[in-house]
Length: 339
Image (cartoon, rainbow, N blue to C red; front, side, top):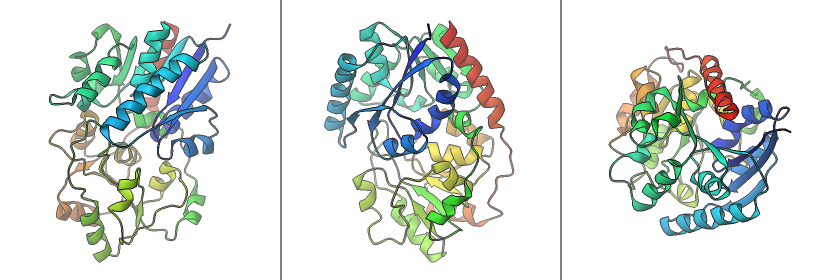
């Protein structure tokens, strides 16, 4: 009898991350997939050929977000079919449901910043739920932080970053350029102020866009929520009318600037100029690791960002190997699934 795995997709990066895993598991294991309506998550999943049941919708605002998470968790616990193991990324709902169902859960994390002092009560509760996972798989550079909060015997590590898992298999599709009004461009994604772990403040995006306009730099802007649209009102940017494959956008871009992390790390491991303008005093260990290796830059100084973008060529000089990182990750995952 085949092992049945439940995979729950919460955010736009999840369909990309789980696509190579779904492809590998489909022939040897039964899969049950659910997803949450947030940003481009559903559209990206469908474009990648991932079929799943849509359960719940993300909300803006701390209270509404917490309520929607609670409601969705209860709904999944009641309505979800039978499974043997839950597989998820940064997903407290999957862990909570598995606790209620008394099923094994494997959780993948890379955001150790959520465990920093000063986190709000909702973030602390979410982080505590995650510690109840049976197995934790994390990048090696985050190990020390997670060891402080998780049972050490639960932790498996791999060298590299979560972005390696799917970028290793990615083949750029040049046809994406037909969907854009220009061939030379930067990709900009704003700060994720809606996330519990991100300190609120003023967005750097309007100031960056003003400078880009003076330098005649084309911008592909990728908003998440309604508030992200407001900050670019009357700004000269191109917002795609439909969700586009982010990896293809990065592949043919001159670089990526983001106020969160995933797209900057994707650009970094793909050898593109990668700039994070993440707000806050502390960075994720994965981001710090990439910066130390010279693969990414972090700054909230507009002049410094512009100078970095305009100097030299568009490619980073350092080389990173996603394939070996993916191989190591898959070995750890298979070990957790078979244990």
